[in-house]
Picture 1 (tube, helix red, strand yellow):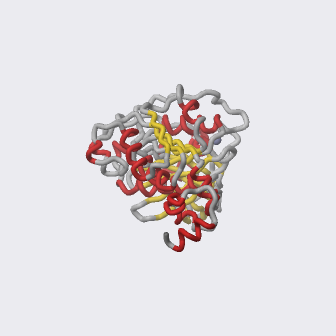
Picture 2 (cartoon, helix red, strand yellow):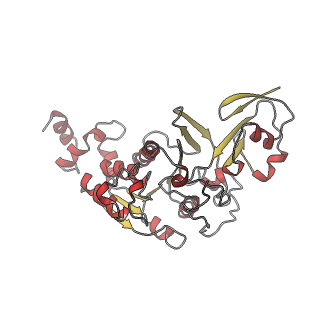
Length: 280
Length: 69
Ligand SMILES: [Zn+2]
């Protein structure tokens, strides 16, 4: 046992020797420590989408020792996913993404419990699934589900991380009850037909990693209470120039879901097939 | 000439100028794909035509990004 491990072991109660060793670089952080690591290990996180964003999010959360990770995805791995969805390997082509992701998560960290939902998130199951988790990560690729996650989390009082990528750009914010939500900023989905998604528009693979790791870091900050979350701020970046921009945003009183007189009182399934719109 | 800020960068514009015209000047290709705030207040798209830009205004274009998979 190294000196660091010995020091940590003497200052610890609940963690096993192996866990102390595994998480030593977290525990050594003053802001995290044993307490923070225990919070991480008691956390339950739902990752919606096991794709470009969901892959790095799940990998880092698994490595960090999040106690329970739920993954929702109705797709199977396609060869064209492998350019960016780093949790899936060539051998997984044709396999359900949730199954492939679970296998990698458990290979990285057998301590993590994984729940898989091999289905689409929609108005019929969203609240039921979300209620089992403490924090939700949006790793989806279309506006209908992004608004669904927003609305369901606002209704259920759950915090979440929003993420979106396009070509060379990414954007993210973190929502806690009472802070600005996706509708506060964007009101509702853009009209179907003008919307490019990842698969039509293309995306530089590493962009998904850049944005997903920000979302994973926000998740870990949430549970450990470290620093300031990306609440009431929308972070965007352009990888072409590597310019990062943070725009202050506000909770909007007239917001359709979190405002004073919300006009939305139920979950909506917007019509907008994710990847088959508008071929240029 | 009026000095305004657009997405954190200084711009000089001729007044009068509506928000709709400013969006056009900034070559926003698809206005449907942008949400706009003026001085950190959300600007409803149905009101863009009627919003007049003033000296010192800070305007943010927030682009919809729907990808993730
Ligand atoms: Zn809102």
